[in-house]
Image 1 (tube, rainbow, N blue to C red):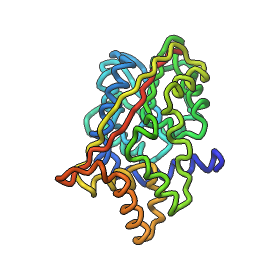
Image 2 (cartoon, one colour):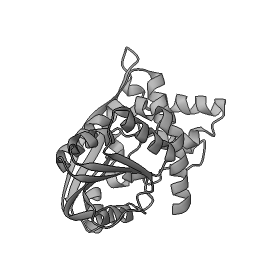
Image 3 (tube, helix red, strand yellow):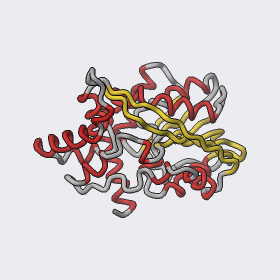
Image 4 (tube, rainbow, N blue to C red):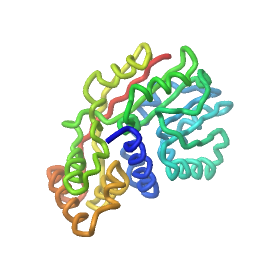
Length: 272
């Protein structure tokens, strides 16, 4: 799949996931977001860029940390995700947040205007992550910080079979390299290749909590990376995918019907 088509798949896939993303993922992604914020050490008055902001789960926390006096530009390739972020920011009175739809590899932003830039759990979906990191670096002032979070190694993410299970039904190739930057040292090497310095890469284990089969399936199929492919499922195909995926995570099912599925995050911060 060429880069242009891959970006289109990502755009419309996340448009499809936007309405259910918050409910499905807000609690389970919070530890990764917290680790990222601890590393980047934002301060009041900073100007910050966030790429791949999704529905604003991290955006609102950043806006609070840089107030008073700070400003945040939140960007995403998905128009529906951006609309959700803008609505959420307005609903809690955050006037220091602006939103714009743009992909991470081509940011319509001047050079060196931000004190810090963040990308939380979005770099896995970019066709050319080093290009995206270099573009993010370009927008940050010399001495400014760039912080990234993504999923870790495939073998440490108990939900990872969702990709081959879906691809066996719908040849979407939605995330062919999803876990490539999760290998130890890979994210740091990519950041260094993009011209960033003093890279600090850390790994964090997690348990993803889902109270029921329904919440698990919604998160993984309707609110995740395969959401666009799922739109093409017939009812029979949907049942086959659900059955196969639940079998792949059956060892993590508890007696009460809830699931505790292992996961791993990688966070890194570097300096322009």
